[in-house]
Amino acid sequence: MGILYILAAITFIILFFINVGWLTSNLYLTIIGEIESFVKGTNPIENIYYSSYLKWILLIDVLWLLTALFFMIQRKNYKTDARLHYLNHKPILNPKICVVLPAYNEAEAIAEVVRNFQKNKFVKYVIVIDNHSSDGTADIAEKCGSRVIRNDKNMGFGYSYALGLKESLKTDANIIVTAEADNSFNSYDIPKMLPYLDNCDMAVGTRQNQVLTEKGNQNSLLHVWGNFFLAKLIQIKYFSLLHTGVVNLTDVGCNFRLFRAEALKKIVNELTYPSTDKVKAGIGVAIHLTMIGIQKDLRIIELPVTFNKRAGKSKIGSNRRIRAIKIGLIFLWLILKT
Image 1 (cartoon, rainbow, N blue to C red):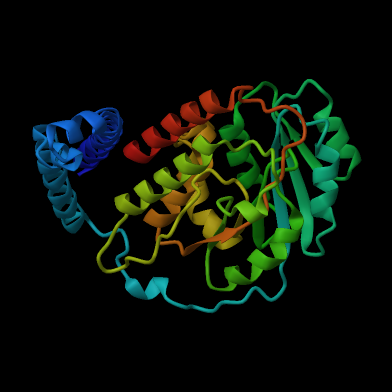
Image 2: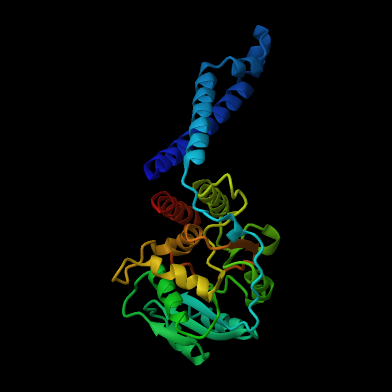
């Protein structure tokens, strides 16, 4: 079924661009040829209705939809017990939070970020995973009172993220929070997300609400629409007729998340290969966590969070469009192969 899913996803993308291309070209030709069409006494809309290309495109679309429907019906259900995904109130009476912050050359922001989370009354630990920074990020974080783990070399974001999660589970915290060290997220979102963990295992932030995003943030239009498209692709992948509302996602790339510690223990070792620290998903570690959580029957909810303009320069690259395409392709491949 994995190969069928990959083929279905690839053909969907191809058909999407074919449909958009056909529509765009026909609209252009209709506008250009409108006067000529009326002179000849024909309706320009008829040119679209009787287009042989349109007939073939519609036929292929219908065949793809029927194939996709058959594929989804035949899929093995990941949700084996529907009772796991209804209201199940298990309040966390004494929240103790450990915040994990992977960081690389974030000297401009790290002090403000650490202090911001330390102000939250439930935050007991802040762990900064310094990915071999050269600008003194680790020293600044230590002076602010956080625990700092220093990588001997640049191991990548995914490695630092996974290492931070594993280290957080060694504390007595019952809630683990992950965020970014560039001041993109705020600790004041924690109190509004925290109550949902009484019924869920993972609360994932979404940056799809424009009124909660600061103008000039690092997300381009491609980021926003790409994240939404990939989120819906995950929903299709784990679609089940018995549990249609279990997974409802709009933003796959958000790293601001809250976990119940006991739930995180069930999935954290899936992030790396057995008997090694090599991470499976690299920069896509957060989206990998979501998919693993779905497979392991964790209860996941997505909640709107504020999203600020980052402090300092992005480490992925200066061109936001190229960065969005690059990350999107990595995420797409991760969804297809997981």
